Length: 82
Image (cartoon, rainbow, N blue to C red; front, side, top):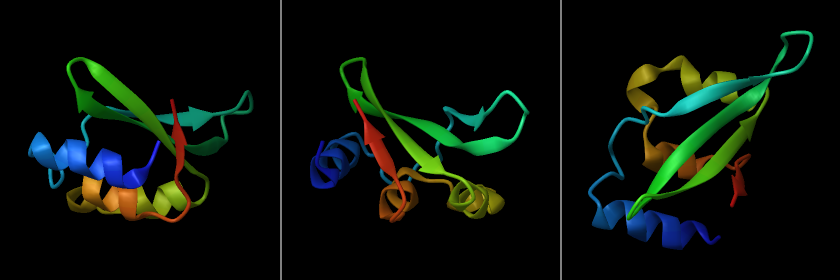
């Protein structure tokens, strides 16, 4: 999915600058963090998942005030899942 389409959907829902509330850390069997998985709403009960791999996820999650959809989509390392 194209980042611009995601941005347009979030902007239409007025969520672009909203704090991300639904995410989880990805850990392996040795309890080592491998990244973070974010759930991004696209409206009408649909959502996509975006992953930030380690160690980039730690930098993104450091400042809680900057954990927004706009800042998430600005990260170079993201992986968009369907």
